[in-house]
Image (cartoon, rainbow, N blue to C red; front, side, top):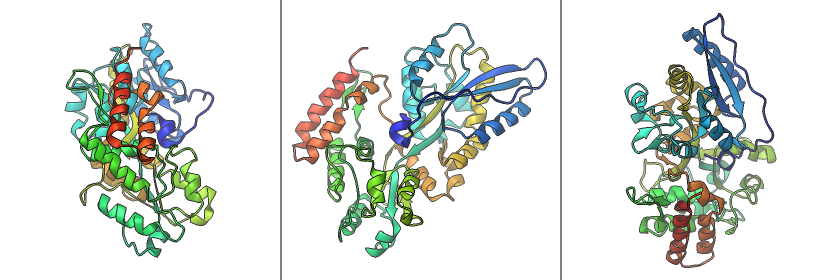
Amino acid sequence: MRRRSLLALAPVGLVSACGAMPGSGSGRRTVKVWLMKDSASTDFVRDFTAAFERDHDDLRLDIRIQEWTGIGDKVQAALDKDTGDGPDVIEVGNTQVSQYVERDRLLDLTLESRLHWGSRDWLPGLAEPGQFIGHQYGIPWYAANRVVIYRKDLFQRAGVKAPPRTRDEWLDLTERLNSGGNQGIYLAGQDWYTLAGFIWEEGGGLADDGGGGGWRGTLDTPAALRGMDFYRRLQALGEGPVDADEEHPPQAGEFAKGRVAQIVAVPGLARTVVQQNPELEGKLGFFAVPGKTAGRPGAVFTGGSDLVVPNNTHDQDGAVAVVAALAGARWNTRLAKAMNYVPNKKSLAKDVADEEGVAAMAAGAARGRATPSTPQWGAVEADNPIKAYMTKVLGGADPATEAKRASRRITEALNTLD
């Protein structure tokens, strides 16, 4: 995924390498690992390194922290090396895997994932982007996704005793909250990640590969149009701008003003809200984006990271051992608890149930999805026709007409060669 857009992180400059504990004794093989800035704490890296080297007395780890800015070009350069001195394991955004697979630069980890790593239990929003033609190249590591952050006091004042169980209930209570000078919800008109979840919930998609016959935009399908209609109805219950996304202005600032009952965002944004308005301390709650039926959260866009092994690794066995440890239940759960992430397996959701925001994320992540798994998707986002489509529909234009126009632009972008 693009961490800046999902987790609102804004790394700048370069971070110096974070060296791991040196190996003891001679004869150890060094496994080089690239992890991304803010994915794991210094304590996690230190403790993982020490434990891994105790368990693997023939290996030592050299873990280096990388910046998200410019990482695509840096990873491509490392994958293209023939010298064997590049990284052996790389953390990449879940939606970035396809661009590296396309050039046949990643090790196929299908056998290990099926026989030893419990791949059937993985979160789909992490596992599916790591696949290509049925083969697994990206191994799920951690996830994050949007939930509803809400004002508990405003819910109580409106007589709302519990979070909504369905999308219809969500609309009803949001309309009740939209009174007395308050906005029932603040939802910007171009929050296309949230729209994607509504489209998936209806059984539609942003684009489809036609069973191998070429990618095409699918915003004009009946299912996708139903998703857009739900977005339109929900967005109308607040005062979010129809011609801007959730960062213009930042929705945390709008929520912090104290007149908004709900926003759709990653749970970590609640900290920013409270920092801007300390009076909201203890007044914020979280629930998973509701689905169409009770007891089943709605589909959501899932961001996060996968672990990959370059084909040019100098130590395939060592690299696979590192991936197995990082993605295994012990260290994956520890990472999730330390960093407020969702673990990579649905069965591990119970291990983060004691933190309300993360528990809400985990519930949604079980039905998470990612953007279409094609290297060309970046070209769609570069000049995003989905945003323009949303603005036009929210402004009163005919949805079917605008959906066809946006779908054509998506099709063109997905079938344009670099």
